[in-house]
Length: 365
View 1 (cartoon, rainbow, N blue to C red):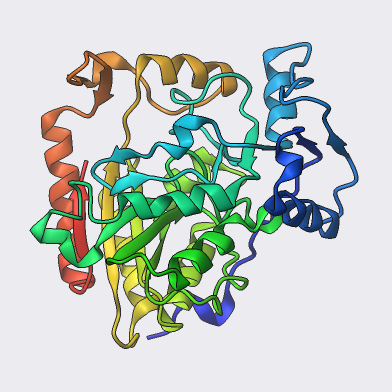
View 2: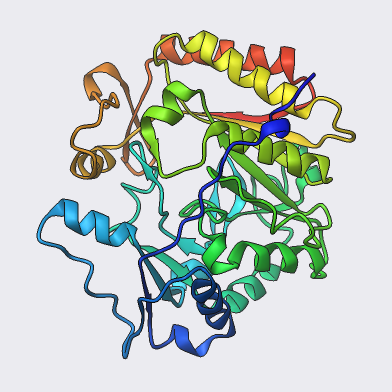
């Protein structure tokens, strides 16, 4: 079989137009690495702030505020909440934040209901302290640490809950630093760093000392989803090629099929997607591949924010067409009705079983 590696599609490197560095962040060694990378990328608008408050992001309209924030990288120190790790089911034992915010323009953005204020990307300059705190969580957790079905993963740390770490790696180096730390540090127990991305520039990662402890997963979807609703990201073909490149280099890899939507001829679209991944991975020795399946959902808060960010979107976010789910604290989430969900799940999981039998499906949500 031929694979997408024969003619890898282009990739995008995000370069911020503005960089703001808080006073506290200026004291940390990793901040110097971030500034070095920004300079190498040609960023010439760098402001060293006298305090720790990020200002100047508001424009004359919501659209102007959105555009300026999305073009800005703020180097800050992590809040105390980022150093007290929270469980992140069903993905991993613990969420570890290297940054908060993302430069992409996804019309279904997962962060819209989670982060407040203008959508600036904040990267943490005190990365050394964040990584040093991981030891206390090893051996604890309920998603993989004490789960027989996933115990082989050890204690898992999810690094892409509030950002796309590969999407900003070009100007931060934070993902490389985390991979290197997890790959070389003596934790006293099995660990795994996990990250999901919609980008494909993996060349700078391939030779890192990962020791099999980092699993990079690529967010994949058919063109009917990626092409319509994911702005500022790499094409799906580039992501598949990057997935295959890492797998052939001996890395644990994963595919995150998300957000799964019944758009157009979705059955054919998802069948073709799985077949493309299978072709790209054909012949990979000792393939270590996982699959995670996430259907589209939204909350009242995220819908309100997304309608402001993308007022002309054609993304379906009609609560009347959805089933309402409530969390244990009363949080409302709108998901697909049971019959739609069952059709989506049956088709996608059947295609995975047929074309990628080596893939371990971790969860469907």
